[in-house]
Structure formats: structure tokens, C-alpha cells
Length: 239
Image 1 (cartoon, rainbow, N blue to C red):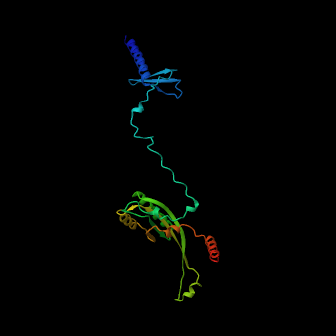
Image 2 (cartoon, one colour):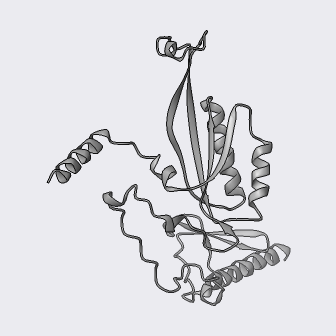
Image 3 (cartoon, one colour):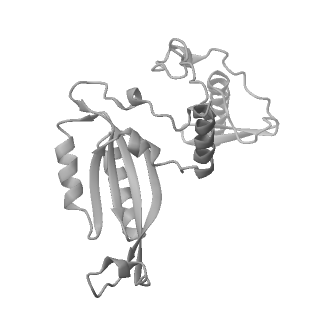
């Protein structure tokens, strides 16, 4: 009798598991859903060979869940700005460097200069990361052409002997510029004090307002074009 009781109990559990799986869906082990299915009930598993896939519920329950406006578009897309023409490259436009609000500063250039290129690059990187940390509007980060300084040894005070002397030391000056716009006037002294506290030796930090002269210093001066313009001006004046 006890064996018959256990057999009836397992058969009943099997049929209950089949009915529940038809409602909820079985856990199918293979990808093709055609070999075998496993039914779980009360901590026990029943395996059925060559079972058909369970009838899945066609209702989509995710439709009544909040989406937090993910995947939706609001309004129209912003039009993309037209590409910059070659004639407009390098032109000075002062209205682009003016502050938007009254208590904000215009475009400022944080000029990092020095003779050691490693220290200049590291400190310029620190200035850039500090501006990002304070969420400042960084327009550009660029390098200016390097300049050479020749140090000569002069014994007397005669300046005519300076040209005849051979150079003793040749130093190269490197410059990096971090351009920031719309900086609040309250944040400016805090940032400046922090930058001066961590400045390394032999490195010079200069903060200047961006102007036309600094804007044109980025571009190389074309000597041939200037000579042709001078010749055209002479022909125009000779008429």
C-alpha cells in the first residue's frame, strides 16, 4: 500500500507540474525547443522527452510598466551647423568669445609655458582636468609653435661683438593653451589659487583674455602670399 501511495503521489505531482507549465511556460534546456523539457515542482524535477514547446502567452506585460521616456523622441531634432568653409578658417569673430551672462567672464587663455616639454605637458593636462572637474566650458586645447632662445657669452660691453660670437646655449620654449569661456567670476579666484599652488618649478602660467593677436598666432605666416599682396598693392598704387 505504501508503494502504491508513493506512485500515485508522483503521478499526481507530474500532472500538476504539466498543467502549471502550460500556464507559465516550461524551462527548456535546448535552443531548438524540440528535444527535452524539464518541469520543476516542490524542489523536484521531472524530465519529459520529445516534448513540444509550451503555449506561450501572447500578452505583452511590459506595456503597463513605466519606461521613464526611454527610447522616445521629444520635439524636433536640432539642425546640424553647416560645415566650415576654407575661407572662414582663421577669421577673427569676436562675438563667439563673449560671455553669455553678466557675472561670467569672456574667453580666457590659460597659457602654460616652459623649457621642459614634459613638465609643460603634465601641467597643461592638470589644468585641463581641473577645468573638467569644475564643469567649465572648454572651447579648445592647443599648442603654439615652439620658439628658440639663444644664450651667448659676452665678455665686454661692446654690442658689436655680439654678432661675431658663437652660441653657447640654445633653449626651446614650449607653450600650451587651454581656452575657457563663460567662467563664473566667483569660481575664477578659486581656480587660479589652486593652479598657482600646484605649479611646478620652471613653469610659467599666464591668464590672458583671448584677442585677435592670440588668435592669429596659431596660424603660420605665409611669406610668399604677403609678397604677392605687396606686389599687387604696388601695381594698384602705380595707376
